[in-house]
Image (cartoon, rainbow over all chains, first blue to last red; front, side, top):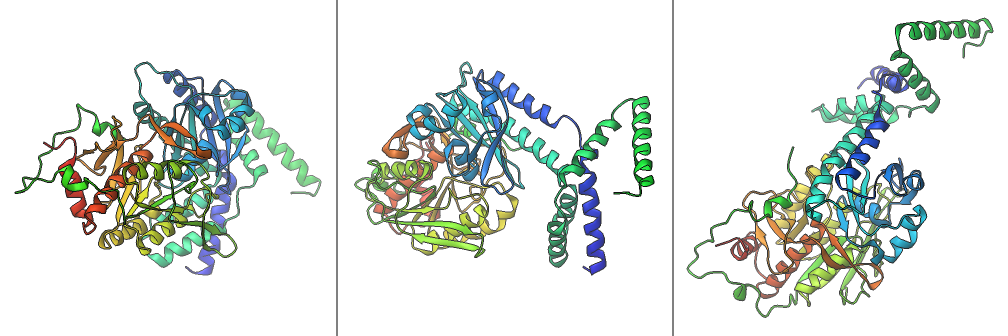
Length: 249
Length: 268
């Protein structure tokens, strides 16, 4: 791929990343919360939670939870080389454990920190064809007439939904890289594919403050006509003020 | 969307299969009577095996693989290691319960951070195939498309070298590699706990159903735990295969599948 083409593509990708949050669909967190709430209700369980892998793939952080110990569990971080959730994301295999108090390391670690020590756990990876995302856990389920195998199959549908929802929202956070990466995936020519992948990886990572700003615009765009007009006016005024001060940036 | 797999072994779903009408029937007596799996090398590619667990007994060899960020390659560390989760120990104990004299080799590929996991997993499987293992238990899988080709190549390589790859299929409705290839013994959990009782599913990719639901399995710190998962069904088939190989060491993977087909509980 010629150099000018490469740099044009990178510029395009970075612009896309910067503005991705402005066009992201709303309700991502609400959707995840509703998945854990629904799973908890259907399994008649004490709690249900979602843990996501960090970028370095070393830790799992619980982002969403419903039920017993939910407030304590949100924000909790565990290493991928330990515990039930760790096993699930490293092996790619779901597991159901009837009595976790038989596992002394588990009981004394994770569970006691949340203030809720469960007896049973059903855990399943959140995985798509592209990446391992994290794990979903259901604690102390009590679904009438259910067995572990049936429960596992049922939870797999929630897991798939959650994985796809998370992946879809991540597309907007890394929009530029994702666009170039999807071009690469669709390319038969190996040299071009490698060049596209390199460009995608060389693209600047999302900038948190730009993403927040784009997120605000996203919200403003969804308001009524009057509010949108007022916001546009305000932002325009603010920009004129900045320019008048001679500090465009 | 593909269905999950264990349902295929439910009584009302699993079809009866026709036994191959050989001049002399393949019987359990012929297949494994008197065998302890002696002389058979079984690799457990997992989270490590705790050799001190009473249900495991002895571990013949151990190698731990990890991705090194600086060297940008997989590093191999030979010698005893711990089991990070308890799962590898559970698998080894199940295999030993069926083939007590089989030689267990622990190939630890899980437990370090996830970066490079796929590469390490591939390297572990390659190590097993190239180091004379007869049976390989893989209670792990990846759904990542990127690994489709390399696992396919390794599954074929294993097949041609007479290495029996026994792999747990992921119980979620996504693709899972390497358990979906024809050269692999793909296993899901079925109802029932008799370790010598398994089913054959005539509608693959998952071919074998074996115990994996509400089982008491070995775990960390010498203990046990009651667990469910296809990852516990795979070592049951690996154990049976090791037991049969102990008596019939020259069987090829396709012959072994024929034997298992003939001895399946749903074969009439």
